[in-house]
Length: 215
Image (tube, rainbow, N blue to C red; front, side, top):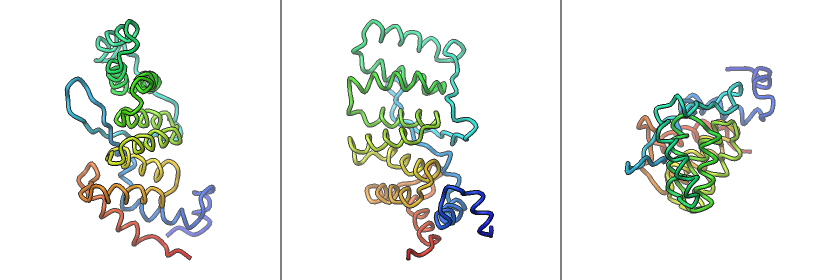
C-alpha cells in the first residue's frame, strides 16, 4: 500500500481519505472510466449504446475528423444543406449532431445538438449525447450539467444517470456522489448493469464495503 507521502504527491488536490476511496474502488470499477452510454438515434434505428474512452489531460482539446474524409461526408453535406434551408427542422439538426458524434467532431456535434434543443428542449436523449461530446472536449462540468438536465426531463433516463456517475467518479473526483448517482439508478432499475454485463449493484456493494467508516 502506498504511504501517505505517495498519496499526497499523486492526489495533491484531493483529501487523503477520498484518495483512499478512489484507489480502493478503482480496483473494482476502474474499467468503467471508458464506458459511456450514448442514446444516439440514426435513421429509424433503435437506441444504440457505445463505449467512449476517458479523455486524458493531454487530450482534453476536441479531436475532429474532417467531414470530407469521413464515411458520413455525404450524409453530413446533405444534412447541412437541409438545416440551412429549413432551420426549424429539429430532426435534421439531431441527425446532423449524431453524424458529427460518430466522427468525433465534438464542436459541430454540440452546435447541431444545441440547435435541436432550441426547438425541442425536452429531448433527454440529445442532452445525454451532447454531454458525452462535452466530456470528450475535456469539459466535465458542462457534461454533468447536460446529464442532470436529461434526468430532470426524464427521471428514469438510464444512460444519463450512469454517465453522471462516471463523470463524478473519474473526472470530478467525487466517488461518494458518483455511487449515490448509481444507487439512484439501481433503485429505478435493479437489474442495471455495466456494458460488460457486471451488475451495477454488485459494484456499489463492493465500494461501500471498501470505504473507510465515516467519523
